[in-house]
Length: 359
Ligand SMILES: Cc1ncc(COP(=O)(O)O)c(C=O)c1O
Image: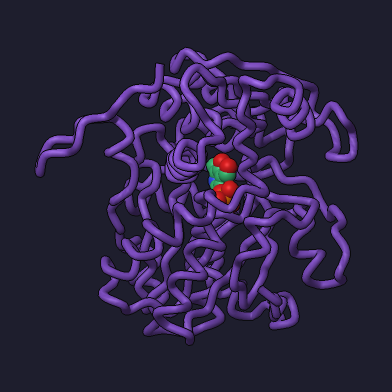
């Protein structure tokens, strides 16, 4: 049965979903002092499911309940690299729905385990290109279509995803920075984060620069450069990088795009853990490397906000695994932050794509 949730009192949350959002904004001292910019990290790992995707999960479910698509006794089904599955499993439990997550094999075991701990069903499928009908996205979609009592969340095309950020994350950032924000930097999985935040924040400040940071291997950077989606490398990051245009991403207002190698996110993860005591997951480390890149190109005096997307332990078996990194020929003491900044400052400006998104 769908649970009727009590209303909140002032200081006590009455349901786990009420703890989603209102995350802290943290100054990254090492990078801010080095660059003369204020580089700020929105701590999305503080969400109860441990990632930014809790926000999307809650909005997707709320809107589906309100529109009557998701009813008592139904099962939520979604294809996910893991974090959306965890968020949906948490929200499903709180609201009294069943949950089935379809995940590609090879993602961090910790994410599979979390989904199981929330008592959701997990269907693992072979990792394969999007064109293959057995891809996790198509598998989840077909399950949703075949069963009348399943509701497919569709985080890529369902714009409740970016709405979560337009209604909540963006306004939080605007308030926390007191409207003092020059640049927003974000990776893209579905595009919900970059779209909702860039839309809201650029409405408040039309001068805002939104920087997209893409891992090597994702097609978006290549798409902005050439008009075609094409892979150009192979990143070990999880939950980010797309090879096709999706509705949530199409809502974004992006000004600049860069692509950075895994080596840079590894370097920055080690530097921040040593200098600031901040442990980052792989997509968050790429975000922070992107923020350093934006600072290098924009110059001192700017306020740059990016996201800590999920808990660092979800990157334990790859980003923090010496054997894995050795296999990938990535070294952990490659350079320090100062030489990384100097390198970014001297990189040709043609590496940064000027984006004109017709939204
Ligand atoms: C670890 C991680 N970082 C970043 C993202 C990207 O978020 P979005 O889907 O809003 O683009 C995801 C998406 O699943 C993710 O799992």
